Length: 287
Image (cartoon, rainbow, N blue to C red; front, side, top):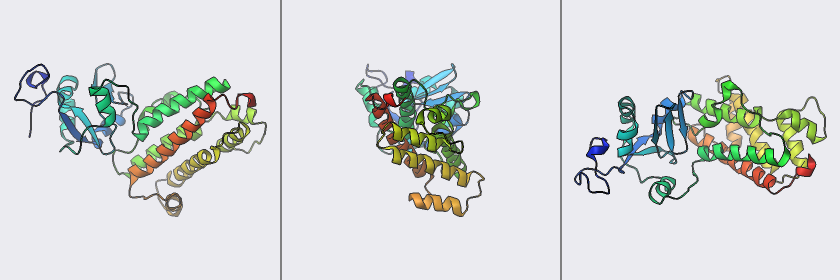
């Protein structure tokens, strides 16, 4: 079934066009529809519940679902330019269930609702934990990204395709955010242990031990697993090291989205524990 997305031709709660589909009819799309926008972070931003193109246009989207994206029919016609609607049409699929609980609560109940998707949750938790750490310790745990990497936090995500290249890219982004961005100078200076050969993860481990962070082993292991997977796959010649890393972690190489989802979920869990530790006032005396 096809119907125009022109808002003036759709039904609404005020009695307009009673025989037409409602403005709030959910229209479903494959998640690959977002690949175009993720590929140009300098032009587009895919945030929690919204797709934006510079200051030109913005559209509400339900991107809190694992396998699809949903947009209200009227929003497609009102908010997306014609050329963008043509792009979205290529990825249109038959409805598979309803909208996300997050979108339902926000759109119909006017309630505040946190995202449930692990990639969107990670972005928020990373920012919240960074802020909390700064407040608790007076210095940043993660260094601010360089100009060339300013897009990383807004583009780290569950892959929208099952391609190896996209998974490699996302593992690389997540590792940059969690490992490469560690404030090694402060960690080294405040851990009380000077070791010129120590790397960032080891420095973090020592400091977390000093402040009594009980979940440090799980969080440190996550960082080591990420770094190992990035190193094993960085040359894009997947061999025994890469396969062994995935097997050790119990991950199926054929399920790219699940691999990234697992890392994101563990990252959220670790960051949240770290934030709660900081917000409780623990560890401040260790500085």
